Length: 84
Image (cartoon, rainbow, N blue to C red; front, side, top):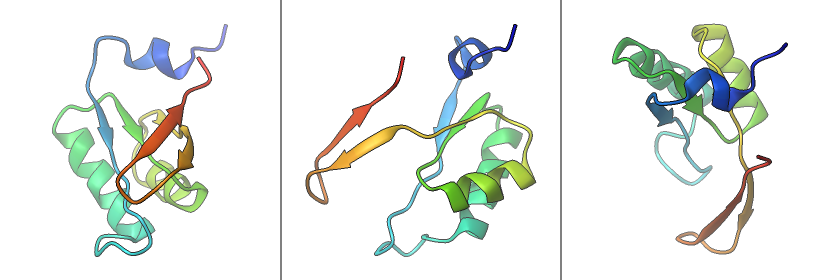
């Protein structure tokens, strides 16, 4: 049986590697390097927000990656709609 993301990271640290287009760290390369740093620090999973970032992260580390479905209401308010 295939493990779900939650099964793989249960009880462990998940690190968010995300940046919006108008933020200084917005770059798939930077997100992949942040994911590598997170892995080296002991993270069990990565949270990312774009398909391009996820691909770059998966090319860099072998951790499971979670992409929440998001509705952006404003720069400072977000609703996350996980599918579990």
